[in-house]
Image (cartoon, rainbow, N blue to C red):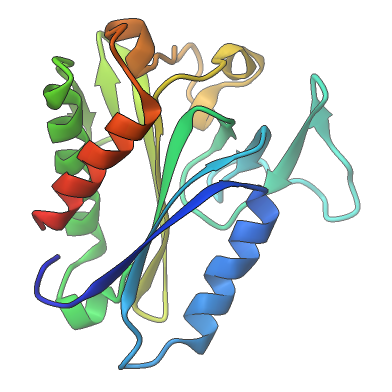
Length: 205
């Protein structure tokens, strides 16, 4: 992604709905001179339901084991976000960069696979159910939306988090899927280091 400048933002831990609104505000105010942005952050515990799952009635308040469930306009099914999971949102003008959505997914996959390899973890990209898997367990979920030529949302990489909420759902709408995280595969994992390696790999593009 080095043909045009990009702004990197490290936002810490944020409520999902606030970030969702910020993303759409960014897109609505963007023009040809707007620089692309990549947001690194974590979310407080929440389930988000993608466009390919069962939507929640707008008047319905829904929780699963005390964790709120909220609709999202990204692709994919239901998933969980929580502290210790690295979220990266990609607000990229794909039209300007001449990147097709499918290519964007492959770029994300390569960045994540290269990051995992840096920590001696060998992952596999599943194109049919977009995500990265290690030993048949999912470690990274990918969900994008394209609007006005921009990409929104991005991916979530499980680094060092509480995985138990995934047991309450069928992650990404896939029955029987199991989740894993980097800490389970390499005890020498530190969140800030993983973030730094991800950033380095992004800058290579």
